[in-house]
Length: 469
Image (cartoon, rainbow, N blue to C red; front, side, top):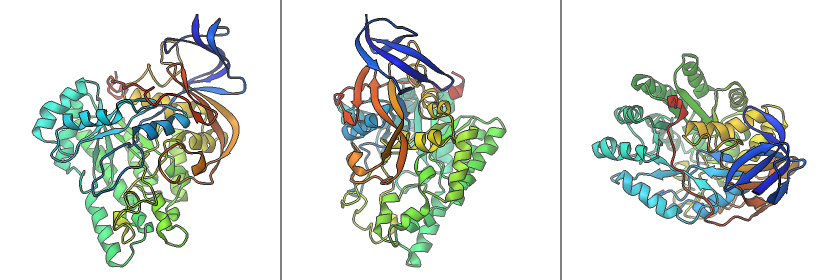
């Protein structure tokens, strides 16, 4: 007998939509048929859509910040919020601090996550100190152990890598078949702009956006692509914000280069004007993230890219800090200059509803494209497919049931995170996840997280399909 049968389902994958029943046993999908037979648990999905559980491939949880700043979400609250937003897998970052062994960073991050995950997790690495030991021994060994992706930064004082370091890291990634995620913003250009703005007395949160114009993202994107071409390695440009960096990615893709791209909810819903707050006041700090939101033309460009394949994945870049907290957005010095406002906004719970509403409900993208961007492509890009990212026989029974017509106004009161605000307050959406099923067990239903805080498991990953695996 089956453990669970989902009846009357309209099943959506990245390629198809069918009406069928889903049979689940031992956490896996074992049959999809017109009638899957008896089961101990029956779920009636009439009027709902059955989608693969969301995979948020870019989230920051319990990440060391320095300077007394504390991230709002650890693993328990962050994965709880993820489950409520229709996600079954999240991929946060194990950050190597300068001078730290990469193995030590990974071990510490696992310890922080142990027993605290409502959904499945798998870690990317962040390389900030690419020593000969790290590049020659630790990184290759960790890739072989299933940590098949890592992130590098082209900005931020404590994380930036210079061009020589980037090339060294890219070369290891090519040899070991690891996916490199690149935060592409030009470090020196940002420092120049920030200094000039501060000297002119332009220090409100809005000027964070002014200090990081599209030109610094465009230049860094082009440079990252050039380095990838030189070393012959696939890379993913993350959190792309507008038309100018997009054009660099399109240029590379037209030439057959192995370049992948990600964008996020803030770039289809927010603009730099949100950073002005009520009247160039500190309320604008709620929207400080990097790259910053741009303008209406940038939003239009992002939608073009979501439709035409420029973008391969859609992630939240969840990076939450409390607003009314001197260990968060209101950290010491933050009110004196935009430079001291912690960069990042919450979004793990609202990622899927925003894209569903703004994309599917408003007919900007198909529902199959929605599934590809939010589940199937992340699974393929980061070595989790076909176990994750689709509804198919043999896959994990990670399924989210959606009410496509439910109308909800996003508010902080609805959120399950530990942040004290949502930047999408008041945004009306159509389409909402009503039940999240992780490996056959319901972990969220009708507004309540029902799964245990240790329901999630850690996932070792294979090679990205970007390498032809």
